[in-house]
Length: 199
Image 1 (cartoon, rainbow, N blue to C red):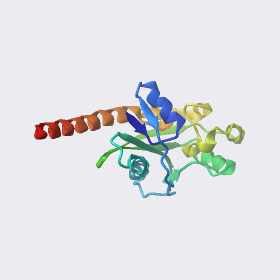
Image 2: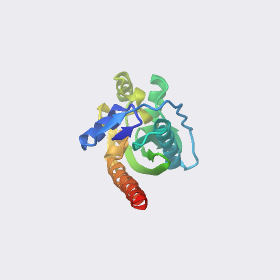
Image 3: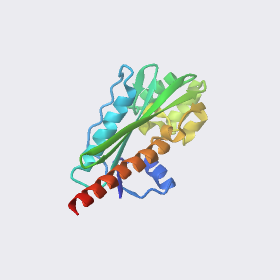
Image 4: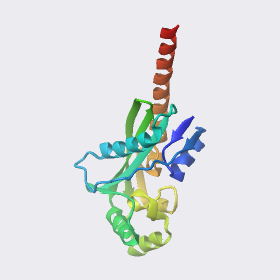
């Protein structure tokens, strides 16, 4: 069975929506998100996704899925807001502008691993101070990268999305499904080859 190395209810809901059976083991790692990465945003997300998956994998023979989502605006990586003031700052930064959402995806099983990522462009409409204050008071931004949730009240902030919608939620399902199919196919082929060599 697949193991999801994430406590995110959004990622869990997405996997359930497409019928993937999994269990959750939360990785015990300290996440570090740099404020800037000189254009290496996909690598930043992939590195953290891999760290999450490896922290859970250990000696298990199950396939472990790790994921990490970052929001990038004008070269700055926007993580989860520290407090309400930080959330207001982030939303003000995103207001009336385009930004990119990157999700790194890592699959680990034993010493085998596969890495990938998805990038989506999101445009915010111009927000008034009252709109930002009201959204922050709702509490929704506080545990979200970039201080918004596209699948919640934050949908009203968005003008357009170019690319994978589920990536903005936190897990690019088309990418994950194709990676899982390829990864599990590779593992089956290796098992078949090992079985044939023993015979």
